[in-house]
Amino acid sequence: MPRPLVSDARLYLCTDGRRERGDLPAFLDAVLSSGVDIVQLREKGLEAREELALLEVFRDACDRHGKLLAVNDRADIAYAARPDVLHLGQDDLPVTVAREILGDSVVIGRSTHSIAEASAAAVEEGVDYFCCGPIWPTPTKPGRHAPGPSLLRHAASLDTDRPWFGIGGIDLDNLDEVMSYGVSRVVVVRAITEAEDPGAAAAEFAKRLRSS
Picture 1 (cartoon, rainbow, N blue to C red):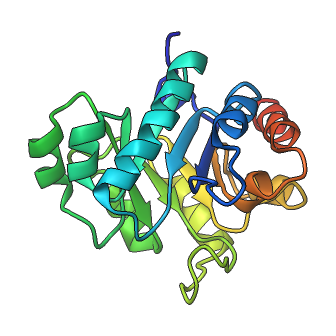
Picture 2: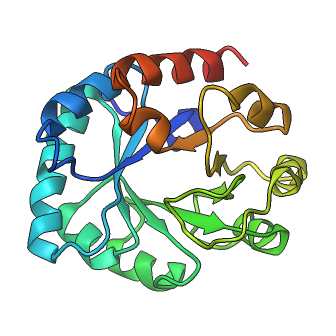
């Protein structure tokens, strides 16, 4: 199936490999068929072989549903797995080096946690999109300062054509507030991965984001 452009994406999901639940293929089918545009495997401490094995399951699901697969942090894993997206944090490999490894066919995203970092990501060579947050403190990033709405308002004011996403503690209860700060794309973790019905949660996020 044809895949969306990152500029068309609204809902970006990060999830671990769900090995404790043992439902990864069914989970991915549920959320990717319900409105998730990009899915990223985010699980720290994996050996390369383990991560690549999980990414094969993600790749198969993304291919079935025509959605984008993202690798977190590691350009070497991305080189082996050939995802659609590599997402880099501020302390990861420089974007220029990642581009040398992967070429121009892989979309590269950038995490930003301050006004200065967001401004830089909006113009940094080789960056295709960026994420701003965390909006609120989240156990996904323990101890990280949450810059809050001011960062989102700043990103919304930037003169850039690059898509950007709000991230950090976003759920269906605060989504309207998040969008009021100028956000039209979000990265979600627990609000979908821990939902009683992940597909229904993804569908509600997608509906509200695309109607804004």
